[in-house]
Image (cartoon, rainbow over all chains, first blue to last red; front, top):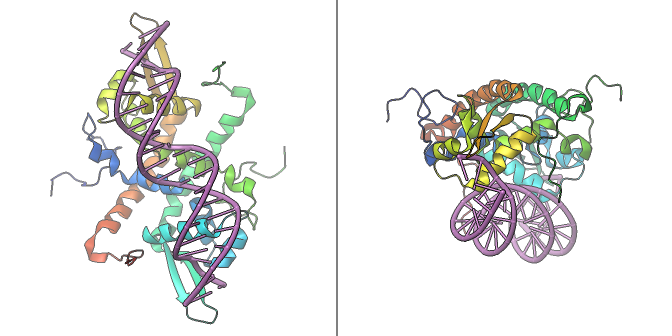
Length: 140
Length: 140
DNA sequence: CAGAATCCTTATCGATACTG
DNA sequence: CAGTATCGATAAGGATTCTG
């Protein structure tokens, strides 16, 4: 309804109003997706599904240490976000297949770009050659 | 020291071992950076600093509703991550300037790519035309 | 096989008060 | 001006048990 060229707040646009109103950052889709990617299992599950569809137990066996609860919750969240498709085959016993949606596949592009940056960043942070503590020194 | 072409686990590489060992996802730099970008204030602060250096109080005034505690904590985290540089000018009263490091500026690239995807995703999720509940139906 | 339900522990975040 | 310290509320994650 408002006449800007995008009605979704992204924080990175040039026309971000300052002071930044709550609505702008509380609804920021970048923060939203980062929040999901930043939880313990989402990136891993996306990576596995990126190789092809998996059944529930296949995912469970593929991830060392995940609990049923967290696998279920993460898959349900991904499904609600429209990134993963859940298909039930009414066999006995039932079999459920999870696969990436089109949006989920598209997401792997930007995530891979972020991964490139993250690997370099991780190297810089762990390279003792150029290490600068920055926060340390909190001697008590 | 180990001889693979990358010694950092990224989960998205083709040679991800299955079952995925804990070490692979617990140290995944993509999840790490997403975790930070996904907290409540980081993307917003990066966006503001992307426009130029800011002093502490300037940031506080620019963000409606942030507490001193969270502003301090978020800046300290960014500094520890090497994304933000903190410069103290020993005037009276003291003045402290925050700005993006080279790594911080580089990060804005991949984040903008993710933002492009996120805006489209957000539209799809809120478009009533193609809305599919997916999780709803939890009637009690 | 693919989960749902329950309980518990641990982070994250916010409000408030105080300080070199 | 630019923080620190303390407290309480809420959310995320894990272990365990049970089921159509």
